[in-house]
Amino acid sequence: GWVWPPSTAMRAAGKKCLARLDELGVVYERAKAARKINTPIVVPGMTFGGVKLTSIFRKPPFVMDCHLAKAFAEKGEILYREGVRELRFSTIHNYRHVRLGGKTLTALSRHALGLAVDVYEFVLAGDERVTVKADYQSGALNGIEAAAWASGGFRAVLTPGNDRRSHYDHFHFEAQMQLPSARADRGNPLKLSQRGAKRRRR
Image (spheres, rainbow, N blue to C red):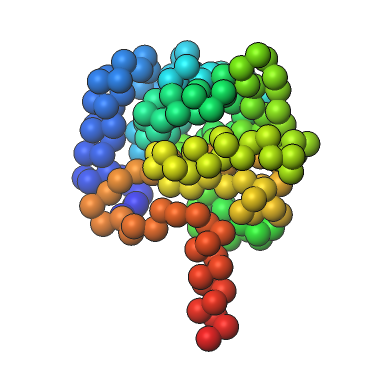
C-alpha cells in the first residue's frame, strides 16, 4: 500500500500517527520534507518509555517517520522492563536499498522511509554496556530480542540470530505503517525466508 507521492491513505495514516503521539505525550516537531518519508518529524528528547536513543557518532536532529517514534513510544516501556536504558544507534533515515543475507535487493530499505533504526549497543540498568557484535552469542540480548518480537510493535527486528550476514553487529528495529491495502507480512524474516526456500525446493 506504500506509494510515492504519498496517497490519501498514507497522509491519513500520518495524521492518525501524529494524533497518537499527542495522546502519548511525546514532544515532537514537524520536520521539513525528506526524501521518501511520509510524515517526517523530529523528537528532540529522543526518549521513549524511559529508553533513550543516542547516536553513536551522528549529530541531531534525527528525522524519522512518525510511525517509528510511535513504535518506540508504545513499546519502549517493554524494553525498559527488560533492563534497557539506552539504545545506541548509527542510522535512522538513510536513502538506500534493502540488504538481507549479504545481498542488496531492489526494494527500498525502511531506512529510506524513515521507519527503521540500527542499534549497535545497549546500555542496561546499572550502566552495563552490551554490544551486539561482541555479546550477542553469549545470550546477553536474548530477552530483549524476544521482548521486541513479542511486543507486536515492530514489523521486523533483524539480528545476528535471523540474518547473520547483514546484521551480525546490530539490531534493525523496523516500524509498521498500517495501510488499508498493506499485506499482513509481519513476522520473523528468518522463518519467512525458510518458507520461501521450502517452496523453491518443491
